[in-house]
Amino acid sequence: MRRAILGAAMAAMMLGGQAALAQSNPFRPVVYVNDSVVTEFDIQQRARFLQLLQAPDTSRAAAERAVIEDRLRMQAADSIGIRPTDEAIDEALAEFAGRGGLDTAQFEQLLRQNGVDPQIYHDFIVSGVVWRDVVRARVVPTVRVSDAEVEQEFQKIVQTPRVTDVLLSELIIPAPEGQEAQAMGLAEDILANVSSESEFAAAARQYSAVQSREEGGRLPWTPLANLPPSLQPIVLSLQPGSVSQPLTVPGAVVLFMLRDTRGVVRSGARDQVLEYVHLRHGDPAEAARIAATVRSCGDLFVRANGLPADRLVHETRNLGAIPQNIGLYLASLDDDEATAFGGEVVMLCKRTPALMASADEQPQVPVAPDEPAEQAPDSNALPDLDTVRNVVFNRKISNAADAYLAELQANAIIRR
Image 1 (cartoon, rainbow, N blue to C red):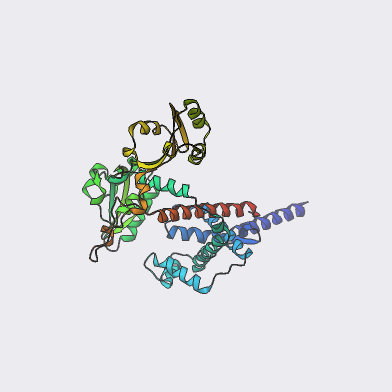
Image 2 (cartoon, rainbow, N blue to C red):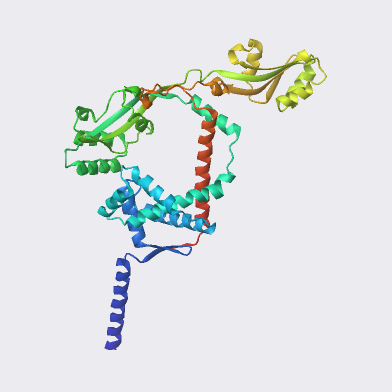
């Protein structure tokens, strides 16, 4: 009996030791993605890589999710015979490293110094290279952009107020020579733990080195144009209540919180151009019937067939140039909607912001040879319609690619 008990105890100890060994093995399988294995090492390394890149989410869950998605991208490429060339990989490696002012070798050395195997970087880059080709082959041919989508996007641009003033809070951490890393670490810690304006103010009072600390870092309303040109796009990319990534300046690391913005609508944004049809029929009952049954301006042309030519007027005018009596009726109409009064019918074909109607005629702002590029653009200038179409097209491709990746994941066999 004693031997049996002793044998059972030793077996339990051995099993426990094997389990502990398996848990401590960095190369143990953690996730199977179809026929691909993701190890503990893969996940730990991706998490360190994300931390080095100062990604918004560097948790283990985010790292695991990123590795799984890369496996799916590689499998999708393999399924349609896409293989990256060495030249494409080298170019992508150099481009990514160059964002930090480094070449590929320097970036790989930085990875090693921070405990990241450069192969993790290579795998990350290769999955991105092949995924672009997958998207071109599988997604791009399915994406179409209609004129209506372009007009809607352009109208949003026209009617969105231009930011003229910003309400900022600042937190400036001293970074004497040799202490830059500590200052950056403190800034990153503040960024990770601040979620409200009051918390940012408390951190500014504690850590900021400038006079604004007494006000919790709060600055007065500031014209956007007064900010350095390099800072303006950073501020404009923030949403009210959000904090910028740490910015390095000589001797300091800086954080900004955007508290609010003020803006103005573009000049002429509220002006309208109306395309409309005015039919003078003469018979009030027939005019009312026509208004109730037509579905487009083209229908109205058909209904006017047989009437004298001067009974039908088709015009496109600025709202201020339309006769007042016609303008009053058009004011309440939507596109392709008609109304009758007396023996007359008025139908609105299209209502367009005046800036959109003249988009193709917008002048390009010339850049003087000796003028800095950031000072050249006119803040009231509008993009041309081809540029807007590309914006919509690229956004739809991005959304469709995300949906395709989600579909791949839904159809994959993923085991943990």
